Image (tube, rainbow, N blue to C red; front, side, top):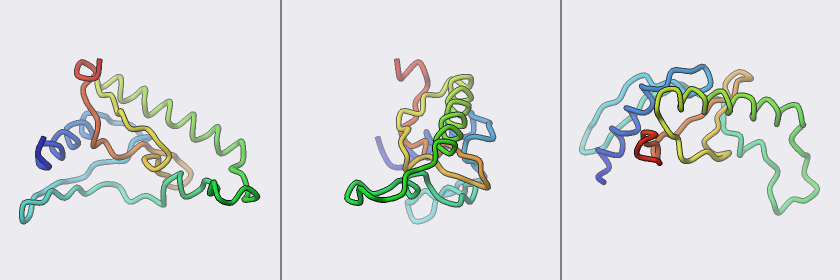
Amino acid sequence: MSSLSTSLKEVRAMVAVQSPHVVRYYNSWTHDDKVYLQMELCDGSVDAMLPSPSSPGAARVPERTVCRVLRDMLRALQACHDAGVAHLDVKPHNIMHVGGVFKLGDFGRAATLAEAC
């Protein structure tokens, strides 16, 4: 699949899913055979909050934060499935946070539920 068709598939998936727990899509365009996506500005991703495996004594993520991440991701995945979209790449790097809300992003591997099953 070409980069353009992959990007268009990502855009279609993001447009289909409307939720406060999914990174908002604003616009997309092409320039010099590259696709650009304009999305909601996020504060960072969850993987930046996690201690490094090489630092066993590092601070742990508070249980309350873990529960908020899980709650928000369940809401995001419910919105995806309600829209007929399977994300297919949920991982800490694709979970963003914005003002205390955790949001699912990067729909580059998303597919319709029919395609995913």
